[in-house]
Image (cartoon, rainbow, N blue to C red):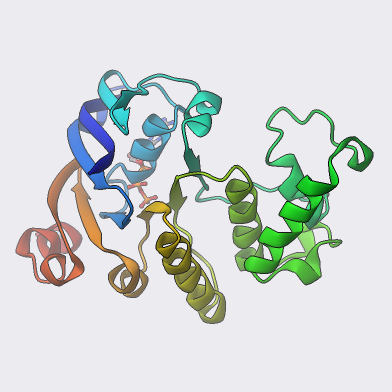
Length: 242
Ligand SMILES: Nc1ncnc2c1ncn2[C@@H]1O[C@H](COP(=O)(O)OP(=O)(O)OP(=O)(O)O)[C@@H](O)[C@H]1O
């Protein structure tokens, strides 16, 4: 079964064609990875898929429904959640309030009293699950970079997305937290969540992915399980620039 799919998705910035009729599909219920050299269009792909930027042409479908050019809010409601390469948290808000604010994208009703107890309990449950419950009362700016990434993920999970797009979850994260993030992805996947992960850390990609798509200059050049991708000459060539 296919969950997230693009057909001839194209996006140029000025004369720079970043996504070039990109057709790709990710597997439902699996941990998918999207890898490729710097500048190969991975984040632009995420931005087009999640409605952050409008593709010039082509289609995006999710579970068979056309979501091309839908707003980010509508796409999130369809079940697609995402994190950002440069983590998005409110630095002067507490960790708990950050998680609660994530379910209210327009920032309304940020006062604790206006919220149901159940929502606060759910936020705390996610913080516990991600191992940062002890930081619930701390301002987000006082967290380490890796902890902020976990916080952002907790906010995304508050919306109970069926599919989670992670943009460089391991970037700048220390090895201990890296293990935790990898374990979490596998656990959340075992509970039924689909993942699509953009990541440069090949150890992490190879250890947690079921299916890998490789981009070079905005087009998929290879796809398959880690055992196949590891030895694919086109992939090695793209990374080595040969
Ligand atoms: N908003 C924008 N305006 C102009 N050019 C852009 C914009 N966003 C991305 N680009 C260009 O698109 C190309 C692909 O960038 P993108 O960030 O999608 O690649 P990436 O594969 O995610 O790279 P990295 O692995 O380094 O994060 C780059 O040449 C970049 O400069």
